[in-house]
Image 1: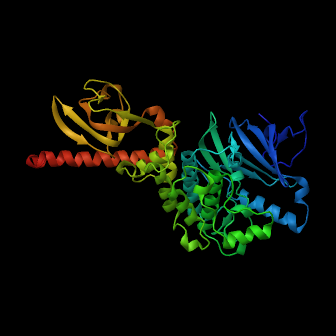
Image 2: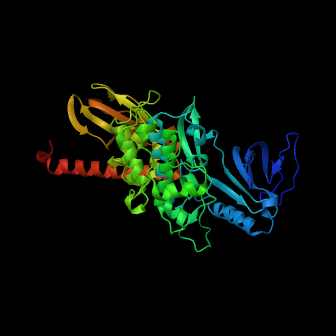
Image 3: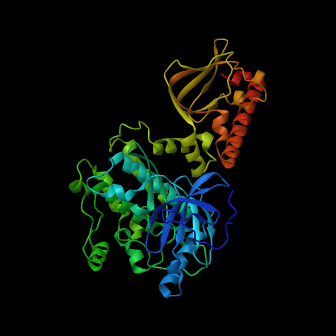
Length: 454
């Protein structure tokens, strides 16, 4: 364990590689990158036994000047979000240390690359991957917007891609140094962002809302599809003129296989007047993800069901009615998704078990002694009594549970549930209570009015 307190001033000692051996109580392992005002290191948090990324402001940039005042402001803006943004597609800021010499942020470490890698014409992603990236980014920025925040610098370099065998399996929004907090009375810095992805109202210095970030994300997606941004010029004045006045070239002319509606969705999101863009992040996300759901964009071979499809399916199920987006993403990533053919048995009478299923699609019949006693459809649960049973002798199934219409289920084990956050487990408890209350009510009605029950 290091004796370096987290908030102690930096005492710079370097190792043979030239980077500091320690930053506060964090043991530095390597340098991940650097820019004009800051540098990023990979470090180990021995106290929590995890890798972290440390973004440290360079000492020289903290000198007294108007320019460095803005840089300090950007550090403060990001530091104010420490511990406040917890979403699977947003890089979490764990801590902010206002070191008087070199202040630094301690952030979630994401092993991967930025989307800049896939903006070149010779390294473009498949269209279905781009749809998935857009959906996840839109849902993440919607989460951010509901907290009164506008990122203001959505660009490929600020979106981290998690790779598996070269395939993008997840993304995370990073770098909130330019964030605008609409609920804060702090002095805000305006006209920030990256010009190629900035909306007209950002260039104007107008009052912003979430539709400025929507424009920027659309510009990023356009770049990922076409290998070039929607507007491109050799000088800043020429680029600004295009952003104000020009329409982006048709994507069908820039890449083969782009469906017309894909360009139409981005064209709307890139509208000069924000009133002409999608009214909400959810509106954009649902329309964008429907490109794969409606088979307008062909599904890739790596993943037969996209995370976006699973998320939207869960959102439509009664069991998950009380779940927020963050908790739904937990279920998408933690649960086991299973397909069952007609006639398959989820459980047999006398079988022991502690798993339970939520029916996502299809129908399940429950039989006791050869008689069908219940039919369960999408949004209902089965097996939860064995899961909730307080002792092993109560975990024996008393009925046969048979698939009567090809089904997809979301299944859980005690280990799965233990891996969920306390908030998600609390929502499951509430859902179980609602299920049990409905079944008790049905049983009561059956006893009081047996002729009404078929």
